[in-house]
Length: 302
Image (tube, rainbow, N blue to C red; front, side):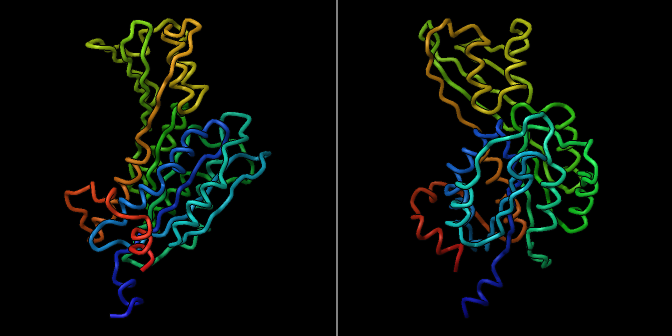
């Protein structure tokens, strides 16, 4: 069997990351940069290994360095990693961003595989709603309808700071395209002045603290505490702010370690799409650690 024929027979998946690349999204973009190789490895180690292409659309807002920046779909995963390095979080002076235009570019300008056997996925990761007051702009509702007609599934992930209007938009886009809306969860751990570990989980607009056998929500804090910090600060910064909001800081530096479930959300959704095309992942996730990056690249590029 020729390599070309084998490639044609493998399940095909196109994945586009649609990233809000404004200043508040630095932590989320950093997670994708850090975890990209692990995500690709987990996806590649199916049987058969899927033929996956990755692309990226970064968007900011009018008046910024750029409104959208497009990185074409490619099987060259080293190129995808390099493209991610090129994306920095900056700009976005007001709260809404040019999400409408970013969604349009992701759906119409990415040279998707239009064959019936190909799965097509977009991961929209944002912490702000779209501008709805721009003249000559696209409309997320029309874009979602177009995606549904083309069989492009849009999974939306709400980052810390997303308000109710933005949540409604992301939920609409996901539901219209048979995707899923999920909140990005941030988990931080630190040792307080009593020497006890405190775990803070921020998901959506809710923060839950756990210390020993006690659990309480941010809503129990004094007015003006954590809630405002979450809405105005993104990612790990928002979770770091929980220390001050909870009154734990006291002027003393506290080491806070923060993690998110962003890579798990993305990997799980791509694997689910791959399974729908006939890929079997089996019960041994530890195989990722045992496989070299060179072998992973060979599996994808063959």
